[in-house]
Image (cartoon, rainbow, N blue to C red; front, side, top):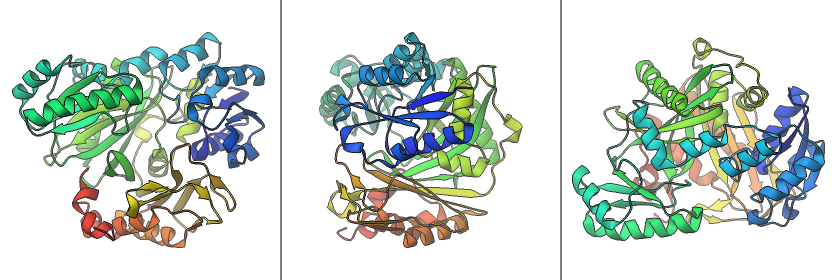
Length: 452
């Protein structure tokens, strides 16, 4: 087992990793930017190192600064969390060259599954259903026009690199295809320094369902059920739950086995998530794989009774998984909402600033993952995620009621948050019935937002 780990992240996930390490008896080194000097996880870490100014490019995304901190602190391993450098193959390669364990898959695997166009090709070789589309990257507008005509409109132009909804355009006809192709390439180039795009059939009114898995160095690989992440805005998830309201035991097994086939084809190691689109007939199609721990991993932890972050660390240290596939039986229902420091009534405008009051909810069936505290100042430089609030109950209806109660108890003053919107989502009749898809926020905006 490792004796000292550097946490190459910030916010609630950094706090989550520090706590997992403490329970494993591992010392932690927390890196931080100048604007994060009051971060909560720094108080709990064994050592701290400042790695630069507030902007991510000069701190959390600067590989040289992080590696220098790791060498100064004499750590065995680096946990990248999610975001930032967590899916950066070069970072994983530099770690390996410096004889520092990267807690995640190998650089080759990150390259293989991280590029969406290459991942689609890998899925096809692994006999995993894919949405009809281009076999790989699309070179120019003429090729895009030809492929779209073959598979039929509507189609989606998607960036091969990155995520978060950037570099994605839906085209209903040839005119919108040509404009969408150019704008998707430009956005992808600006966001990821990679303008590669591909085209696939646009699946109308799909659900977004993902399979959590983890693999060790001893040939063991296990899937831990699914998470339904369909309630999202512009491809940014707002609500995640497990089990999915549309899931059956048979479909879970089929999707889980497909996810494992894909992971094996990519020689996958450590925790990862294979994401699928599921249509109204319960047909599912491979979308992408995230080669890291997910924001919504606590949903799986509650339903399957595992600690995924601890398991990540054990696997990276060369230990076998502590559970088997037959142990993974879902228990009850868990729902997570992301509380962001944003104003939904003003187009989700970020709301950084000083948190004058923070009171986390509690009681039976409630879990809160947050780095907030009264007096903390949310900096404007990073993602606006302020807290993840979860409920875990015997049934979905009970989980909804517990989560409503928890959000009602939660107090965050000094900044605006998405709590009012999340409460309206939980009160929505279609959500309660489990009748929703990825277009839920848009189709219900008249009732979810006071301004309609």
